[in-house]
Image (cartoon, rainbow, N blue to C red; front, side, top):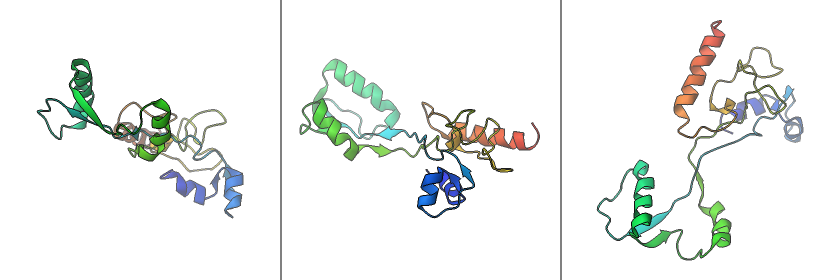
Length: 163
């Protein structure tokens, strides 16, 4: 939820949830209801001819694809042989998946009942308050969230200056 917590503590969020915690409701909005994040699931293989050690992550997909294509994987280290099928692996996944800290969407921008801010980044029902960070993204981008978040900030500055 990251920055969305400040809205919740200020009384902007799901009314029932706020009341449960003794927070007076300023605006009943679905803050936090649209959380998306990139997940990371560590996987490690032994390769028959690994010439590179500690290779940068962006090369991983190509290395794995080539190793699989050429039969170059000698054994799987992680998650390991203890998960012989899809069902055991699916049960183990929640214990291994971690965040990449690209959380978005908790203050979803839009023009429907799932929105927290309008297309001009104004918090619905609260005069003079805008949100200008990754939390307004309706869905997560395919890559890093840094550049889109910077663009949102630049766009917010333009809106506030009358653009």
